[in-house]
Image (tube, rainbow, N blue to C red):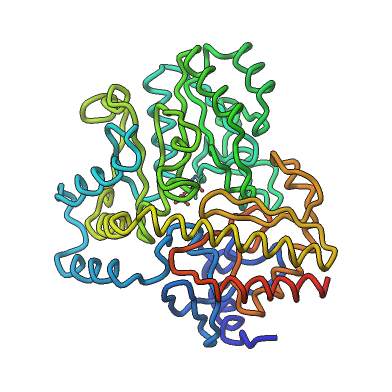
Length: 427
Ligand SMILES: *Cc1c(COP(=O)(O)O)cnc(C)c1O
């Protein structure tokens, strides 16, 4: 058992002043009966806790740190930027620079707005879809998470699933009334819904490669059907690529499926660890945003220079080569985990797309949320705690995704596979 005395003490203190001791629920390690690890610092693929323990990090701040922690170039750019001031509430060149960089990877964002989180990005995209179409209803899929705004926090996977929250206290029922939820990858269910209500639907929001119930990729047939139905009924198709953008493929899910959505939301990697969200899409639609149009959107810290710099410095360092290497590392790691699972007679299914990966305690194929719900959560929890003890920092819930950075090495992966081997053998 590694020593986490200081983290235990820190958690006691933080729990006095913050609900659950944390500022975002899944950090609390509650579902895995653990004490959260308090981080002192990170460098490249490693994080170091306040007791001095070192971990190979596959959470990477829940996705953003594709370059790993405290990347030298990003740090240098941020240090330079901070001396010039952190916010002006007036335009800077940096915002246009980041927008232009984003367009190199996501050309369908003909126009975009910068915000400070993924939640804000999806919330604003939904408002725009409603304002643009003059319709109220939206569609989301069970187990897809789009942040914690009222309309979207319905059957939302991620932390909601981890803590088994079925209803949404604090959200007036009218909000969920305007949100249709449909099982993921279910072509018949979505076709049926559009047959009945298509003319009332403002937009469909989807994680095209879902990552908030572990990695569950959308099928080609499903995503193409969404494009077809929304085109037919004049609804907007919104790709929520807050997690999978720059991750499932360098150019995101629209590259994988060769589908152009009407609107796209980005977050996580696009800020490289600083608070950035983006929503954007067709110019004709985006022109409905204030001050050009009448759909209101604003933000005191939107596009602030420090956050823009984090995003710019991160995207500037993306490359096909480095991305490919990270993908082959994911491949190697998942194969290794499957091998040691088979050796120890533990049922494991791994899923991975690009630099996103998951291991499910299941002996069946997984295509939607209900398949993930049926995983063996007790085994997940036991293995998780052993991995943490062994210095392997993975997501603390079966409903969350793990990631790979450009900095992880084969040596890290072999250490990780060995730790899984040992944890499986103790089940
Ligand atoms: C993380 C996430 C969000 C919310 O982003 P925040 O920055 O946490 O508000 C929205 N959509 C998806 C797909 C996400 O993974």
